[in-house]
Image 1 (spheres, helix red, strand yellow):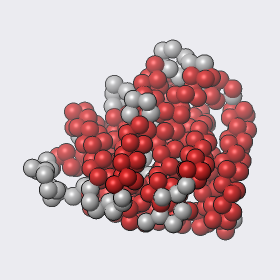
Image 2 (cartoon, helix red, strand yellow; image 1 turned 90 degrees about the vertical axis):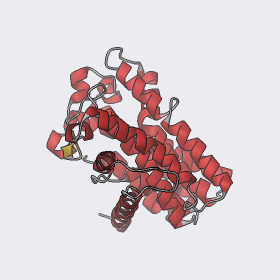
Image 3 (cartoon, one colour; image 1 turned 180 degrees about the horizontal axis):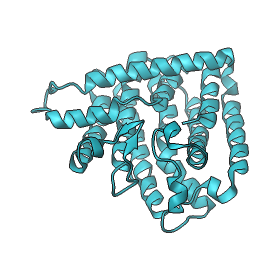
Amino acid sequence: MTGTDAIFDERLQGAAQAVQALLSALLGVAPLPGETARPERLMAAMRHGVLNGGKRMRPFLVLETARLFGGPEEAALRVAAALECIHCYSLVHDDLPAMDDDDMRRGQPTVHKAFDEATAILAGDALLTYAFDILADGETKLAAEAKVALTLKLARASGLGGMAGGQMLDLQAETRTPDEIGIVTLQAMKTGALIRFACEAGPILSGASKEDAARLSEFGRKIGLAFQLADDLLDLTADSATLGKAAGKDAAKGKGTLPALHGIDWTRKRLVELVEEAETLLSYYGEKADVLKAAARFVANRKN
C-alpha cells in the first residue's frame, strides 16, 4: 500500500465515522420545529436502513472534493449526510420484493425483512424527503444560491432523469436486454448520477470556478461508470459472504450488463482505462488531488 493509499483509507474511514455520527444525531426521536411527532417504528426502520455500516463512498467524495477547493467542512458534512439519506432510501426500496427482492444488505436483514414491506416503503419515503430538509435547514450554513444549486442537482440526480429513472430501466432490462448504449445509459442514471453529484457538490459548496466544476463532474462520471462495472464484475465473480448480499443475481435474471456483453477480461481492461482517464482529469491539481485519485483506484478494484 502506498502512502497515498494509506491516507485515502484513513480519510474514507474518518468520513464514514463523521457521517455516521451526524446521521445518528439527525435521526433522533425528538421532532424538529414544524414536525408533530416522529413515530418510533418509522425512526427504528430508518435507522436500520442508514446506520448499518457501509463504505460511505458518496459522502467521502463530497467531503474530499470540498477539501480540494477549501470548502466549509461542516456544511460539506451536512451535504454528505443528505446525499447518504438519498442513497440509503434507494437501497431500502431496491431491496423490496417488487424490485430486487433481497433479504440481506451489508450482512444484515434488509428493512422489509427486519420490519415489514409497508414500513420499508415509508422509511424510504421519509429518507428521500429528509435529504432536502437537511440541505434547506439553517444548520447547513451555505449561501442561498449554493443551497438552491445543490438542491436542484440532487433532485435531478436522484429523480426521474437520474437514479429513479435508471432503476426503471434496470427493471426493464430483466425482460428486454438493452444494447450497449442502453446499458451505459442505465448505469449512468442508476448508479452514476449520485456519484457524479457527490463530485459536483464540493465545487458548488466551495464556490469553485465553472472549469473546476466541469472537471470534477467529468471525474464523477468516470468513476460512476467504474463503480457500476466493478459492481457487475463482483456479481459474476464474488460470493455472497464477501458481498454482504446475494451474488449472481444479475446473471440468473439474464440482466444486460457490460461484463455479460463483453466478458470479464474486457471489463477489467476497461476499469483500468477508466481509472487512468479519471486520474488524468485531476492532474491539473497536482498532489492536492492524490487522495481522489486513490479513490478512483479503490472504486475500480474493490472486493465488495
